[in-house]
Length: 281
Length: 257
Image (cartoon, rainbow over all chains, first blue to last red; front, side, top):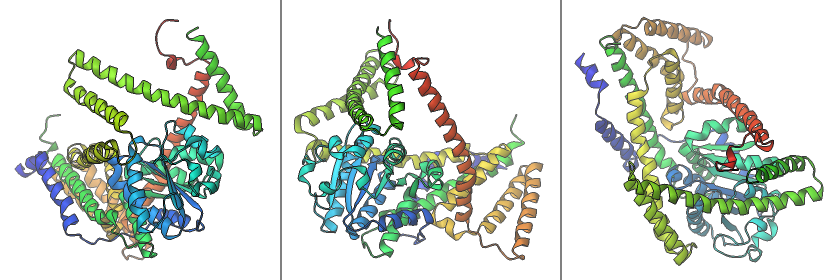
């Protein structure tokens, strides 16, 4: 029974090393497990796909660098999809620390499709107040954001002549890592102004979004890195992008990380039950 | 006065906003637009208040040399440097706040913090996730199904073979641990599998692990989440009414009348 005693007390440093090796290996040599798109990602993809050319997709960047590996690929895939369909992109954010990430996406993705700032894409930035910001955008976006993130007055941006309030936007996608996030867009943007809302969310919070999805309040759902990978695959399958797919590349690592955790849980339980009778109660 | 004026404002505004929601008259809409502007201004002041409170807390911790006071120095220095850089060079893209502090400090630090979680989770799951009770065992099985079902590797595993593996694992654990409950559980699982196969004319059922994971999330998870959401919503309404009517006064803070 010594083996079970050993299995019950595996040093945490061994666990860390095994985890590090198994997460890193697939990044160097991909396993090619492949990603198939589920119904929730497809629903969001179709909703974006149905926006007529020239209309505007609102993307709310409600996350910070800690959730960047999970959520940033969703943001870039959504932007690529919209630009490929000649849909304009309006961006804003409810998280102050996410402001720089949205800027990074604007600077890198728009030039890939030769999109001009102010005509095809506008980034509003961040303002304090969450619910008041969304409600204010419902009445008049310029009341809340007189200038965009870069300091240009909104009146000087051609795209903003057609987009004056939330009712002018056919679909909003909130990429959320928590609160504030998609729930605020549902509470204030949808209930008051009828805004159609899709969501990209961290895997750990995905279970919270399911009731809103089934009730029809959410148009589609991208859950965690897998959701991002599913969207990237859909965008490539439809020929909208040939760019590198970071979420797809990371899915092999995530698969192995899950397997490591499950194997450790099995080992822990086998050892626990095997040695249980010998332990004093 | 210090308490009665805020209570009166809260009562009047609370009732006014409730009525306003149901009245689409231009006066009502104008009132709503005006108040949302007020809220944005108040929120901006709240940020200043929050920063002040954070600084006071850490200065106090530093003065009293409470446990972890060294980290308070890091917090205060970081807050000071960010403020000076922001005020001195501006906050627009291309300035040091964005290019140096955000891109080179905040992004890697934040991302590293989150990435480390994978290691802690693996270690914690190994130590703490034990099937000590029937409820814990159910939670464990559900976690297995969802964790595998949510990654590409799970799409290659038929649910039937997952259940067979589970039955074998239960049997091994039951025999090594001399647990009657687990051996009986294995028997129940095997009978269940045979009945399930019976429905498929004794061929392996074509249900994959992600389908079951989807069911776990869409049915039992959603039922529990809905119940929690309803509870939270009802609690929110009750608390709001208590605040509006002045029964709940915690938000006024302490101090003399």
